[in-house]
Image (cartoon, rainbow, N blue to C red; front, side, top):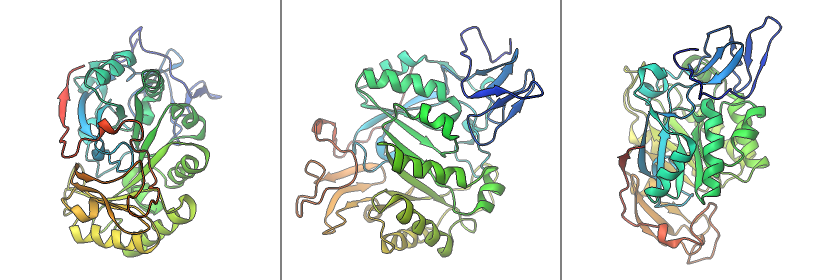
Length: 363
């Protein structure tokens, strides 16, 4: 057995044996081929004895209670707490990764804590979190773990959220997203050149995931675009991205433009100027998107939810804190326009105006 694989480690899903006897992983469009003892690009899916194992199953790099706005999700249970966790490894190679100490780490380099799916669900219940987020590194690579946690969570009345790059095969996503209630998909740029050179992946599979989420599921999702100066922040690229979103997903999918800070292998870049975010937001709104936000900055105007019909301020935010929430059963109290999202028709007690969730918790 590998040092990562124990008798309790489950055999992975989404793989086959190729004509040369190697394992072909069909979880993501990378389609890694692994000989005996080898792991895929993500580090955590490994060929042992001619079978593929999910080495990160039941191993977390830590748990925290966050405001759900931190995911970021602005139209899904706003003001509520969410229990967040991740594992090690990732199936992308982003040179600008802002969680690189987790996503680029191997399990043997992390002080992983054992937490089986039942324990994760019980931990969320113990801390009164209505939702669980699989985040920090990409949950695609621990899909088996995601399925079991989200299934048990649903049975316990909890919501499950994925924070992901959306780099997944159609075969795997129908399984992994089966019990998922919401997602934030990181649309990192809108050129194949950016994806190829700076993430070692491709753009089209992410666009395919977004179309699938919109047209073939009931999952609520929002989109994040991290704007990196000189790389993906041009007026033309932002315009083309917004045009694609309106055309293929419709105007109601929330879009978050967030600020980059120098990290990992892109220390030479400056932090994103706030005006870059504001300019992008104005452009997106002018092209017909209804809900556009800025993130990783303090900006009440850019983080507030407005009625797309009468422009009334409905949910006022500062960073991740809700300062005021005037929604009435998901509608604008002035013009009765229904606001796209999943709010609190049955659980108004979840809304904690001014709450500042954020703490680490022990499994």
